[in-house]
Image (cartoon, rainbow, N blue to C red):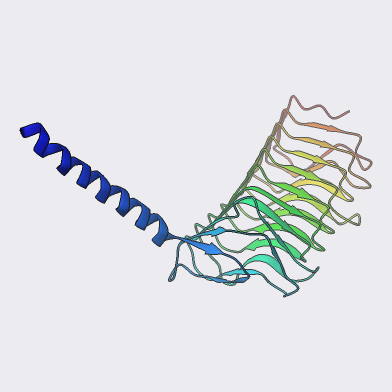
Length: 255
């Protein structure tokens, strides 16, 4: 008898928990179907439910910190101007994942600290593919065919396991540019019109491959920095250039 009384109660409890979990999920993830302003005052987590094409200058405008955007495999495509995903004020803790941003002037631009972009492609933008502020992370990103700069990151940036190809349009262009104290590991940068990789002083640059930069340098690093186990070949302006003194330079392939 005790067992027969307990089972309905357990089933009811389980049903209540499942209903609560589903309601919680529905309440905390808001679908994105069109361009607009995203704010943590309304919702902290968003998910694209379809691809978006727009001729408007900017598409998704973030005005709050601690927002997550899951692009869900979809794309945001512009008409050659504006910014695909833009922080209108400096933000922190914003995460953008799993999608494609193309054909704007700037693909993604997040001023502020500690933001994350991962598993995203930024392609064919008429100025810059991706810009991030200090202490931000880029992981498994593809930046391709951006007209001036592929990826630009400021102080204490981390970029890893990403691919940058065919970015730039003049000798002053840079495929990947990071500010002081940054960490750059495991990236492949090729066919840049300009300089492939620029890293400011105090950076850690390990295990990257840079080739076919033209007419610029493959890797340009300001010392003191830690530069190890990189491969830089077939770069027209030279393979690796160190400026200043105090770099730890070891086990690089740069004929």
